[in-house]
Image 1 (cartoon, each protein chain N blue to C red):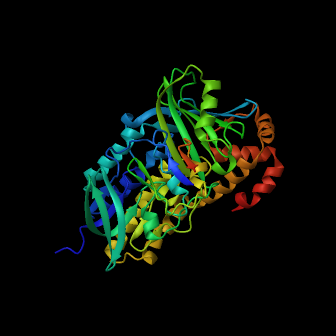
Image 2 (spheres, rainbow over the protein chains, first blue to last red):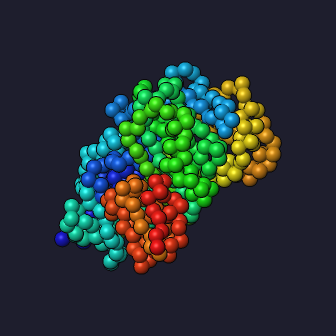
Image 3 (cartoon, rainbow over the protein chains, first blue to last red):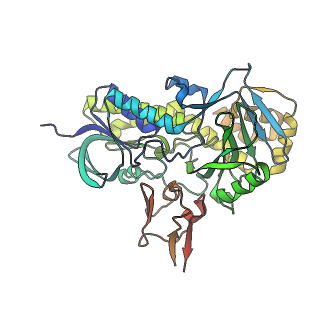
Length: 392
Length: 58
């Protein structure tokens, strides 16, 4: 008789969870992937923009691409626009996904690799027993206990697995972006272009974005930092939409929190690894979390395989996963957290001045890092403030 | 005084759970549960809610 029901249970079928489950299953492990929602990918909690590097993680399928991105426009409080474009026309720098399709596609990959998938199934408790984990789950109302060697918590910003495992990831009010987004039609924008409105006037501690979803619809959203804003995300977005897209119609409302804590000390405990938003893996500067989540999912998957091969599921063995994600994108999280702290403190007049200094300059390659470097070149004082970050 | 959720406004995004130090709330699928015995009325979730769905009432 087997001592456990599964080698690995993955909690949460977002991109991080599905890639973890797929990776474990491909290595021949017995995997259960559970999702608390009755539909994978719904409700969406995301602006859906990703960089081109997603191509290294999954084969691009037209069905989950809403738009290709070639250009970005950054709009400052006095309505000056800085344009960033790809070096060559027709060279996309990123994509806007259709998460409802994308997430199901990834879950299907996990299933095809051999993972068992169960929806409308929540984890409701975790206990350790004889070196393994007893996970209590509620599956369409029926409570049962399943035993596993390792649990991967990819259960999002509201992670319970982290709390049960004793990993404190509580976010302070300057470590989260409070977000609302409308999928809008009947609005005008340039195709293949993303827009970012920056400054306290628009979004204290965050920004407003427009990401096209095809030619006749776009995600228009806002992220604000609760510590810096008196008004809620919804109130500020409504004001922006009234002023900028008075004729637009809203066909979907998306609500979410994005962790912008930077790299946490550890994402592991005995028998447990966290991946994606549960481990606060989203980028604190851009708020983007899909690619880091998928990378983390892969790294957690291979670490789970090695731990099971070695028969050692202790935190000390699983620290290998901490090393891996920190070496992969953890340093960028730390650096971008420092840059974000500087940027959100800037008053609107400084942002306007920075934009003026960039007027007429063509910035090839859309990357926030590149933009920051360009800003610093023009503003030596900023360079002084950021020297520790740039030298690290 | 008591923390309450307006379910007609709540978008069940989980942001309030992520900022709660006291484990005083939980998102069960799409249903936000508030545990009054643990809530300290610290207001962290009220300030974080993107939809203004949380408030403290007398």
